[in-house]
Length: 300
Image (cartoon, rainbow, N blue to C red; front, top):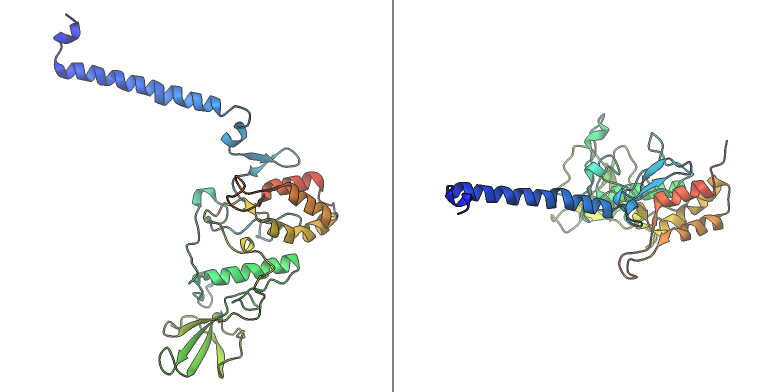
């Protein structure tokens, strides 16, 4: 007779459970992780397992190819000799610990104007963010940064219109909702009524929101990915169109021909996954590292 058969039933069950825990701990807690760690060191997998790191022209760590980053100075001013990434809503920008979107949709067109003396109290609508970024990119790249529904000063071209019939009838008042006084409204009149600037703190919710398209081209020169953030805020890629828009500036700063810069962009452009999924893209970090190695910045 086995010694275990003489033990109480609950002790036998405890011994069996302990054996299962020990076996599973060895298999799942030790053997499996060690096997996966070893497999991750195989050629072709090692870089991905370590976070796809990239080194700069001097061999120093430059970041991860999987996470976007800013190419700007300490004040946030874009470095003219580098390709710029798309905007980011992750924390202060490209923060992998605060990945997230801006959670604003197509109906986000009216700003919360800051109170006088407290510029941080306001909040920009998605439309104004897009307009502001497009204006800034246009100035940086020396192109027309205008977009439909944007004012020349880079905010959403949106009126708050009051009618004598509530939501219909004769216009009695028109306010440029995103242009705080004393700004000059982007329209002087609307349906015969003078347009006024908006006063912070005044409630315009009873007015009818009327976006004004303006005369900007239907297909803006500044691409969409240059003015909108990705869902994660960490997208490391930009479109070939945005990279090409930056090519003239890069060529000037690097002292080379634009055609050479375009060849570099083409070299580092990846196609659609499996030939059909997604869109062609350019990894900004990889492109900038190649830029430093191929066309080093000119010394002052």
